[in-house]
Length: 84
Image (cartoon, rainbow, N blue to C red):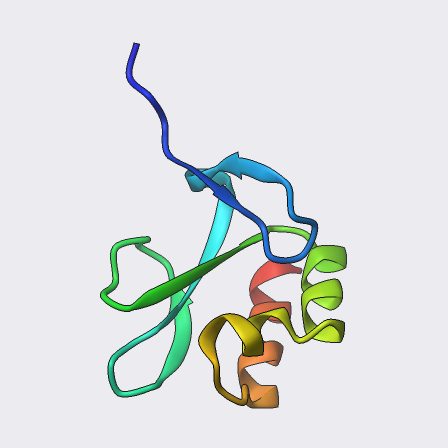
């Protein structure tokens, strides 16, 4: 049987299948965006398709620590729209 890729959600710290999570990526230019394909180049972070996980990640600044940069409110709003 093939081993399916698993990733950890930055909100709840649960390990889930990669396809169940939303990928957020930071490219070489430092731009942060949602990766709908899961194959974009750059550093990735994963979050559950769950508003509680997103709010927890925002509150604890997990995304900012993962990407080592300040994240604009527009990115968070885009994530909220995608999840709801």
